[in-house]
Length: 461
Image (cartoon, rainbow, N blue to C red; front, side):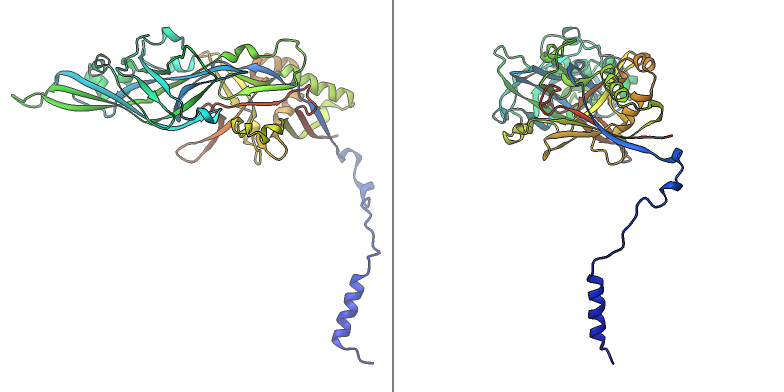
């Protein structure tokens, strides 16, 4: 009998369509694995003991922009943003000639963007005041938190006209000739080396004029420190020739390019959780400084210790493969559009004290550099912030408790928005977002959907 090629193909197809009778025994070979090489793995979800705490009244050396404005909310009160900046000639080696006299002075700072909580406040009028610093701005003042209001600047404004901004324009104003006259009195060394000039001449301080009515609302404006210029018109006697007539010219000065300081103060300082208070259903937070979700190292360690003991785990054999923080918030905020005031990320940061120079600074947990970490990105579908903190949790578990306590604030964590900065060579650094002001709420430990820490762990032999 002869079979056609088509018949052969159909027969093969029919055989392949039959259900397989072969089973896979996954236990095969397990008896040959030494018991001391087997890993016990598991997962656990723990409640996070989050409370509400206030950060320092943050001041920060400006790296991108000047921050200026005021926002008031019903729950948090008023957040004020001002800045100080040094002033120095745009070019080294400027020659002011002889008998130089200022005839007028005008400054202009370009707007980068503005930030609001209420859309109706987008174009409100804000009046700006400009003051003369009492001392030159230097790194000691910038990093030592030495700003102190009236001790910091002369209380009489030097802008010679009302300065009004509406959130869509540059900051422009004439300033007093007396201040500008100080800038053209300089030694040759100061004119040749701009750093020396900045150290010996007083800079400027900018703030939004306080409003006696102080209504709810407001706006925060970000100005471009790379596009901030003071123009000074002078009349002088040239010294590069004989019997020359007096001349008029314009000298330009950079504002804040060497040293600039953003300053923020908050009336929310009294909103921190009291010691021993009951867990809250809701935790409110704001951007830059102010009030934040906060976990003490002591509370976090106690939560982890309770889990280890109640589960009968051996701490010495415990390996944290992955630890994920989940910070849920009410989905209604998304539906109401309130999430427009929420940051795109919320990630833990530590507070460090440099005892050498008495400087305080905050930095995201080193886990932020882990490949694939979303550094606390908002998940809109799940209405929560999520971030990987595996190495930090491993340290808190395994370090000696006395050592952790000796580090003070370094193992307490504040939750902050995080952003990136790139240097000239394209290297990316994760830093706290100290430019944009946000207001938001996350669920507290007493809510039906509380903040949690999900751990994937292993026990080695």
